[in-house]
Image 1 (cartoon, rainbow, N blue to C red):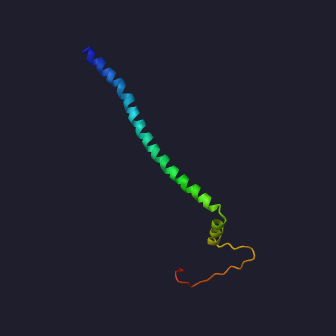
Image 2: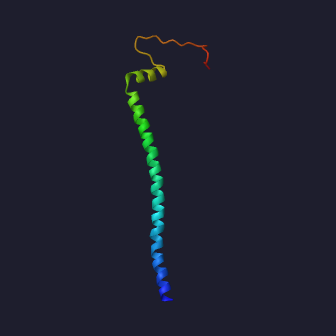
Image 3: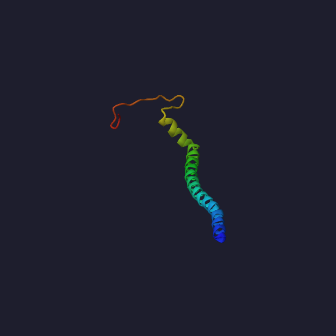
Length: 84
């Protein structure tokens, strides 16, 4: 009977760390997924930053916002197909 109690005690000592290991493993797996997602977002943002540093992209974005160069006359054309 004493050996059975000792055996249960030894098994009990291993259960706690085993449960902790499993939960840590699952959390690490979830974090690796988050890291992959954030890395993809980082890559996308770096590409966007690089694209925005080119002069042609900056001009296209400025035109999209309705900006004009000094000395240019802006024209607004209404009634084209596709206008809302």
